[in-house]
Image 1 (cartoon, helix red, strand yellow):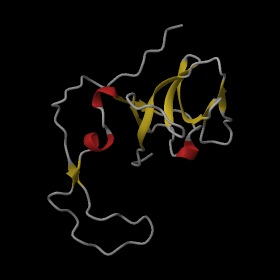
Image 2 (spheres, one colour):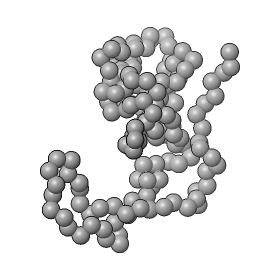
Image 3 (cartoon, helix red, strand yellow):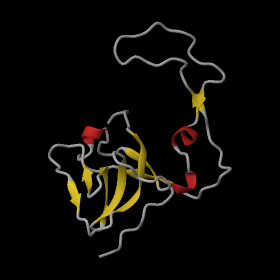
Length: 151
């Protein structure tokens, strides 16, 4: 059996790598009834996803979600996850863990005596981490991106 390679950055990191800011509408968009139109864009209204979603580039990588166990928490099959290894995992965080030789994403539940890994799907019961096992948290999921076009 081949050892599992750790997730890595996609390509070489350069702190001076160019980023591209894209226009942002000045108003929020309604997902119900339309709101009256205003001026759509201003010169200062831009958003760079690298700056918005990644606070520590050298400790951040992307992963692709597989399976349905996190659907109740908004993570579906094929979503792109942004994972930051520099963050200290806290109760309630969605984390990427190395568990029994494989990577999985779960919501971390911490109590004084116990750690548990919860899914977002009723068919997947929580995983109780035995007290004598050290949980290997690879990082905290900070964002997830979902493809909408022809999915």
